[in-house]
Each structure stands twice: as structure tokens, then as C-alpha cells.
Length: 237
Image 1 (tube, rainbow, N blue to C red):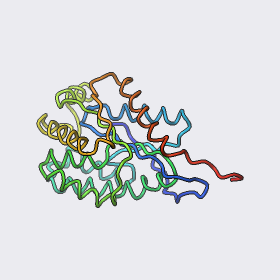
Image 2 (cartoon, rainbow, N blue to C red):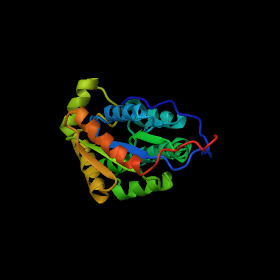
Image 3 (tube, rainbow, N blue to C red):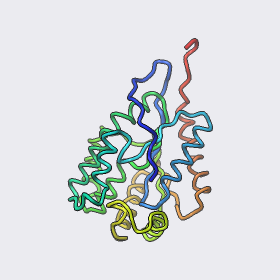
């Protein structure tokens, strides 16, 4: 998973900008191709003149990146399910308050590799804590922030594993190396979450060629952006 852009210093909304930015999240299992699609979308948006913040979870802030190491490093295993869920929620709370909300308030487009639905799937379903219980924890951690668009890249657990092994060999972080049954439970939870809120989700068969996926993602994001006019400088600013 590629790193996010360096975290900018939090900034108050500028009086020279109007309108809230658009929040786009990529979700899916390990090996679904999220990092590739995040990169392609960010490049496309920046080429079109959009001010884009690229970020990831856990991470996005110095605290989040530190917690990322703690929660994903196999050296820290075993980590019980509740502790794991709380570490992800803590990293997410910092991410929202220090990076995502300020960027959206300034009219910027935020593109994140994972957000709260990952915890609902991985800790709620995969770890057995309960999807709704973990979702409620993260709703509190984010103060109710919901993406404008969630792109779910759907692949079978075996496909994700094969891709990860091709990329990293048999190495991987503490969650990537879980058995296929864990990843299949996550996949089914993602699909169930998408079925609950179809207006927010774009569900794509991520076995398809990356360029086809990127074109569909770009079309969906541009549709969302059309409903959020790009901030413009005031006359004389």
C-alpha cells in the first residue's frame, strides 16, 4: 500500500472559498487494487485542476502513522480484537479532526485508501465483534462523518491472496496474512454494507482490468464533483 501525501498543516476554511469539498473513499479486501485506483484517480483529478488531498488509513497524520505501525506490524501480535478495533478508531478520530475535516472545509477533494467501513468489515465481521457495534464506535470516533462516495473494489479472497503473494511473496502485515476465511468474511460484510446504502457506493468487480475500473471511478467522482462546485476566489482576492 503506497503512502499518503505528506499531511498538510491543519488550516481554517478560507473566506476566499465557498462550498464543502468532496470525500471519496476506496474500500475492499487486501489485494483488491485500492492503491492503484487511488493513484489513478488522484492523478486524473489533479490533471483537471482539482485540489486533492490523498491519504490512507490507518495513517494520514503523524499519530495515525504511528498507530498504523502498532496495529499492523506482525511483531506486535497477538492483538485482541477489542484493542485492534480501538486502535483503528483512535487513528481515525485523529485523521478526521486533523486532516479530513479541515481539507473538506477548505473546499478540497479528499481521496482516502480506507475509512470506517474497513473497521466494520475487518473487526466487526472478520474478528466477530459485530458489524453494527464497530460501526457505532466509528460513527462516534468520526463525529458522524460519511464519505460522499465509497468505491468498493470487490475481489474473491483467493484472488486477493494471489495478488498479495505476487506483490510481496508470502510476507504481509498482520491482517493481510490472515487466512482466506477471514478475508471472505470481510468481503461479505463490505457487500452487505453496500447493499444497505447503494446511493453512496460504487461496487466494482475488481478482477477487471485496472484501466476499465479507473474510467468508471472517474466518471462517478466527476458526477459527485458536479454537485459540489469547485471553490473559486472572490473578485479582487
